[in-house]
Image (tube, rainbow, N blue to C red; front, side, top):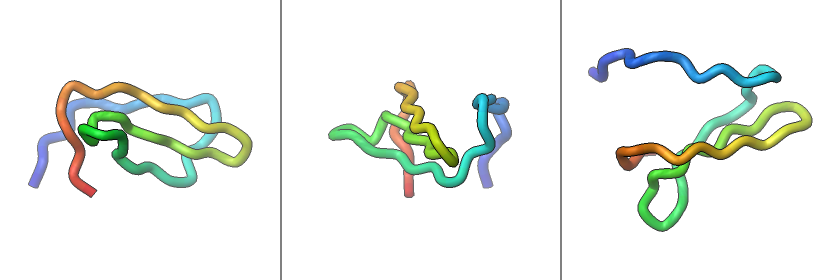
Length: 46
C-alpha cells in the first residue's frame, strides 16, 4: 500500500485520472469541461 503524499487540487472535480506519456511520468486529469496534465517526478502504474 502506498503512502499519502498530498492532494492535487483542480478547479473542477476530476472525472478520471491516468498516467501517460512515453515515460509514464505525466498525470492526465479529466473534468466535466476541462483537461489537466501534470509532470511527475516518478512514473505511474495504471
